[in-house]
Image 1: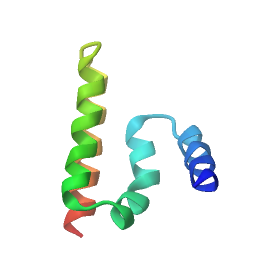
Image 2: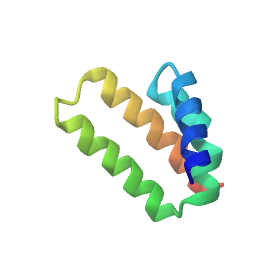
Image 3: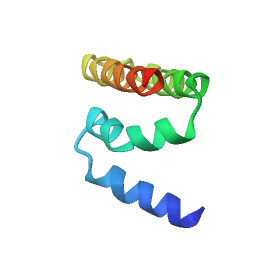
Image 4: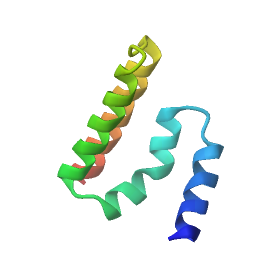
Length: 75
């Protein structure tokens, strides 16, 4: 588990924005999460964004994440 978390942190640190991070993790999400869990993931991100806003940028990034996750669940 520690190895996976370390790898995930490294991959996430390579991303310049949420959409890019979602792209990097799409394969992982697709292999490990059910369609319901993918929807829950998007919901959790939305909840975090609501704490401060969400901003226009956050809304666009969440939309991009949701499109990627929905595509991942459909494939």
